[in-house]
Image 1 (tube, rainbow, N blue to C red):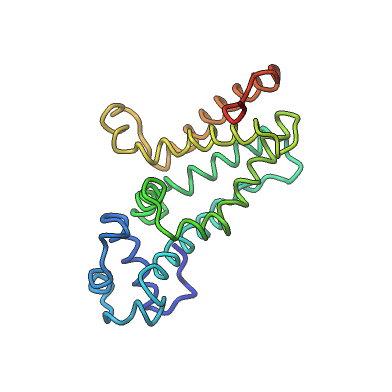
Image 2 (cartoon, helix red, strand yellow):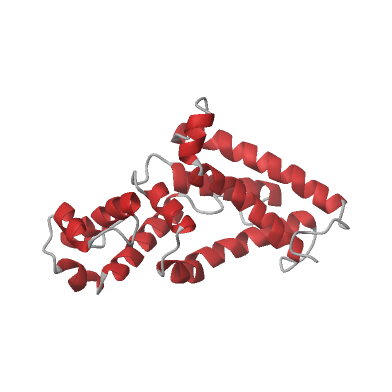
Length: 219
């Protein structure tokens, strides 16, 4: 997590908050415990962030935007690259941002908790950060399907792509038990991204060839 712009106390608070909240959840984590782990005064949270939720908002933003800085959605592709290549770059970016060993060890667990048990912080995160990413994916899928990004089928297909990626985060513990051969380490991210991309492109090709098929969003 890039906290070079923070003073030392604020940086330590953000790191400690990420670790504690990922383990206990936002509602059960206490500012006292976070401050103790950070080696900071109990009043430091209010001083730097206003309150506990303000601190959590800062943790999510710092981690999220640092992930995009390290692994941008286009992964260095030219804007006019074929849509299939841009989809693979999008999926690679997603997996690297969540599973890379270079991220804080608590990041994937924190995001999994936020998806399963959303806090008030999710609203601003979705509005400011996740929605633009969602729109990028819509544009790629719309191009592959040959329809406008606003088409309901695009939204359904985008959800399916994201759902495949999130499965490896939300079900990470279960996967370790039922698929002990499956590694979710950074060196396997490229293999996962390739599989999800190939699977998604095959499904998208079917949808393009069978436009009469109704999406789940249609009555």
